[in-house]
Length: 246
Length: 386
Image 1 (cartoon, chains in turn brown, orange):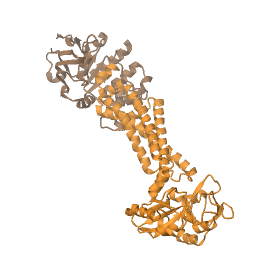
Image 2 (cartoon, chains in turn yellow, orange):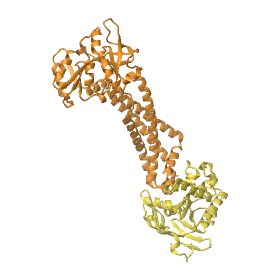
Image 3 (tube, rainbow over the protein chains, first blue to last red):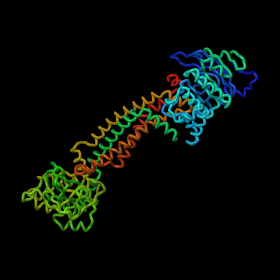
Image 4 (tube, each protein chain N blue to C red):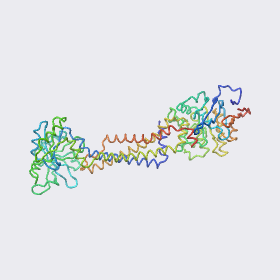
């Protein structure tokens, strides 16, 4: 199973390559396979929406691509690195530089200001406090929240919190942004603003985005939509209209 | 690094009341640690300052039973004895009968031979030997009462009246000595035995105990046995021991202070361990999803472990240091007013250092389990729970 938006795409441009990935979880004595021999390639600069019913394995696939979990079988390469072969320590270091995560419920540190929340990933880098602060300010500026830098999360609206979370995701300039239902907790208008921001990051800043969503409206903003069901990819469509099936 | 400290500080202040109560419980425990440690030191200080080359010989029954003055010369004749002198408990006080003073009639001429650590200016020493009502006062004692050389003071005895029935004894401060550097020996006064012996109404030619300086500390047990053997089967049999042993035995009459202090502190710190450990575990449980997010953005297991451990150790060390500092202040205050009874009441530098080490240990023990759990946290599980 190989889903690609364009047959002519060069394999070297694939920033994410998933090959024959299987993922099983232990449930008591039983082993439940949630992903079955799954293949997926995402090109650099793509904005890909991953859709499917609950339990189809979307988030599990996202977690595997983000290096939060190991596949039971198969290979995963992101930005040329075989992350399925890394141990947890290497994966942590790799995550800090190569992927940014955006969650449905923002997951900001409630005790830190927006600025300090954005600075969190930079604590892992060797840089001065001034440099950290400067970069975080730039990230907040990109998401349009520089005037809220000193605010705590509880002083922000849901949309603003998600913008801070996006700033945190992009502050270390990762290759890939992984978003898990980023608009799931927002009203339609605010969700639209967040999707606009993601589109901007994709088009203007060249970020590759993989977004899990249930929302067809959100998926429309992606350049490519991949459907999953029961742990398999079943359909892939690009914004140009090309469709493939698993 | 500063960023991590900021994160630790913010995590600790997220529930201010809880952190405050935890901090207070640690502070109180360490104040107790300081006070009880100081008390224990006060009772054992005599043992610490006791000379290894000195023996104490007293009546076999009790040290309140006198021994004949003639024994001193006989002890002096025993092999291995360098010099022997005597002391007697005067039961002295100045103005307030409740504030007893360690005043000892003694043979002042040999005092400096047996206690070479007592430093007295030569001129003052000569004046002291010339004046039979002259007394030698410890520096701390003189400071406490505002006495100085040349003062004439009425000293009282709760035991010995003079032949005219008066319990008041006029004395002249002729010399002030400094001791080994602690308050214990500088809270003493020495007077001429001859003046005391001639003027007292009863008990003539007896002394409280004999202090013997021996030539070889290695031979202390043999010399002590020889002294007691010398007076065996006499009407006044003796019991000799090293000065340290005698002082320890004296302190033990009050009770095993050291053991009592240790038991109380063990109870306090065990309870503290449970309280702080539970608080830390709860604080980590409440932040499971936040810790998972930190790991998601690249914090390694080890970094998360050290962060949580850092929180625990910060609380314990800050609380411990504040508690020790407060304890020091309390002890200083108490030492001033209790100097007559507990001259050694103080917090030694080693006790302070031990306190800091205990605080570090407390922080480590209470934090290591929650920190280890935080370090092992599975991101996927924690995010799905959160």
